[in-house]
Image (cartoon, rainbow, N blue to C red; front, side, top):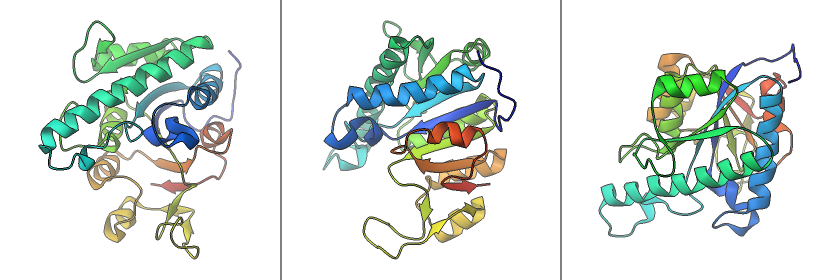
Length: 238
């Protein structure tokens, strides 16, 4: 393990969107993309950073798009979809020699561990990447909120929010060419302006526990490492 002295954070929560795993396909899992993300995570582990991860499920299922389906049922389906993504990322990480554990908020002992906070922290201390699956285990809460909750529980020093866009904008940059990107924001500014950074329950959790959020693009290789070493990328919410 290389010794790196300019680390800004020693323990982080990496929040990945499910869409990130889909790559250009838009649906399902692109294993080349999963491998690229895994290599970037391995860089952090080799630097001595303790990494937790939460993955969304937008590449497989979005509860809000369940048509006339009961919302609770749709959300549980989304939680199960995050487990598929978590196992895919675990497989990619272990293929390149990174010790990994998947912990699920919904028990499925045959394929992963149940979420136990102290066990998760022990894994992190031993240099294992812990992937938290099935959200918070409760319907009506997003994986953003699950990431904020788990980050607070494991005492993460920051949330690295890897998205398809390179930061937080005043409006959708895909629809409005004149959208303005923010370099930094406060939690309160995000909540008051209704900016699309994280869900409001997740933002409130981060504010209450003073966990900074770095929103950046996953499309540019090396951005995860840049965030860890304190380089100015994306948008910092604190």
